[in-house]
Image (cartoon, rainbow, N blue to C red; front, top):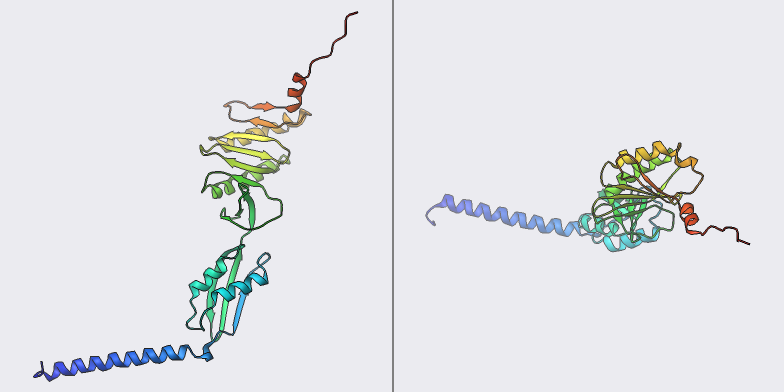
Length: 246
């Protein structure tokens, strides 16, 4: 090898190039850590109504480590995603000293089995909320399906002045609705839309004319439905008073 000057020159050139790259890396590392590249502004944007300034400040303290170049964007994003009402986070650097954070909040649609909330995308999340919301009940992973059906149920029942306050799907995929009036609709597992349409078609000419409060309608029959009226049940339970023989 020592008798081959061309090979030796190539090895020397490679070593010089490696040394130059190492020096350049060290210079860049030192320069990027200088105070001149410190982040001086964090701009948090988005239509925010539930995320508070205190929560944002706490997330900034947790997630911002480093300067403009050394900041880990994934760590910063994760710090904001831990906030209760934050659904999605976008983070980007803006030269020379700004970090821009865009937050998207959850919009609550319903309560999830009294333990969490469901947003308008059908996603389950945990946050404190004191307002009135319908309740969704179902197996794990069914929140999105219930959210889709809830919108259909709400639009359909609005035609007769009814509102669903509880939507339930069983592990066997059977649907049940409880309305604001107290009425429960048993829809079963098949032909859900058709059964609800049959109820709506009969509502004005049948149920609305009864003059009695209904508490349960079973729509799982092929050609009809069963109705439970609490007043009639109480009337049957009460003994009739007759005249006493003299």
